[in-house]
Length: 66
Figure (cartoon, rainbow, N blue to C red):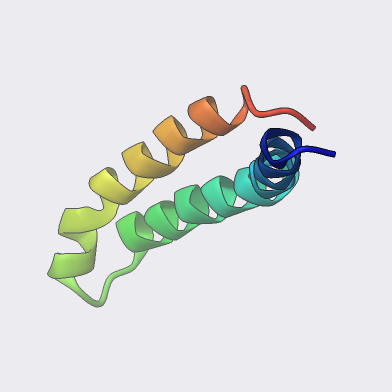
């Protein structure tokens, strides 16, 4: 196996869909929690950014190989 094939295999292992989808879903859930909590106005203010980041991440990650 040459160096290019090993590097591509390593990248394919790193960019698998499952763990990244779980991370994006957790980010969306965190944003929804931040949106619905009654304790901090700062968390509420950043909730939309967190939800959008998780959603865009999920859309990108859904194109990764399984």
